[in-house]
Amino acid sequence: MILMKKALVSLAAILLVFLAACSGGENEENKNNNQEENATKQVDEDKTVAKVNGEELKGKDFNMIYEQISSVYQGQDISEDQMKKATLDQLVGQELLLQEAQNQGFKPTKKEINEQFDKQYKSNFDNEEAFQKAMKENNLTEEQLKNNLSEQLAVDKYINEEVETSEPTEKEIQDYFEQMKQMSQEEVKLEDVKDSIVTQLKQQKQNEKVSKLVEQLKEKNDVELLL
Image 1 (spheres, rainbow, N blue to C red):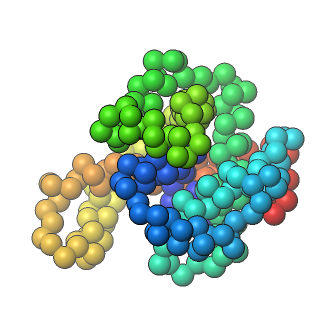
Image 2 (tube, rainbow, N blue to C red; image 1 turned 45 degrees about the vertical axis):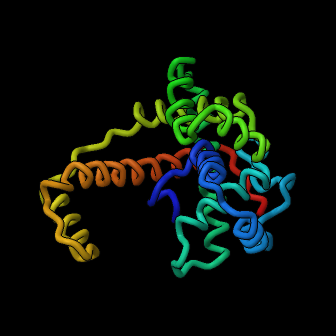
Image 3 (cartoon, one colour; image 1 turned 180 degrees about the vertical axis):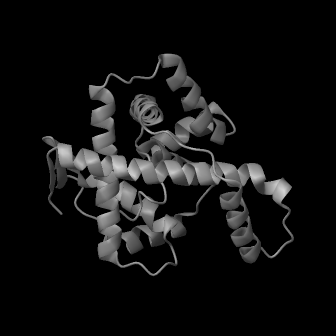
């Protein structure tokens, strides 16, 4: 599963990218170029691309994740078929995790949702007016964003309960640091980046375990791929 091993991209994160583009003042010409470039790679918004326990996953969500994955793998040697497979894997994986989280009763509080709403969305804008303008331009509402956050927080709670992540060893940290030094054009000291390396390695370990968890959920649940 190509994307799962790198990171799980939440719908909330994808929406954040779209909103951030608005706050950054992306010009109309770049928007049109991006739309033309992606037009041949997307599916019809209303097309059912997969079913998970009868729940239909639509082209609209597929397209959003596809665009996000395209930016992650920009410049890399990966075919369009691989991109579509990675997108479908991601979309199905998210739905499986969400359904399992809901079945087990994981649910965030209103306080947790509101705190993340301010942190993930509103903090990217200078004022309320700019935030509301960005939502309007992207045909989004506060209710939609909070619903997406609620789902993602429920999944996060489930993953944190289900997946144990061990601390990286000193050898793993040193190996990662050596790779970092080779790629960096500036002198890097371990003590300056060690905390960041530990965070990255823990995230990698968690992603690998989540990937395995999703594969287990696929075997236990009814998954139908239609693309």
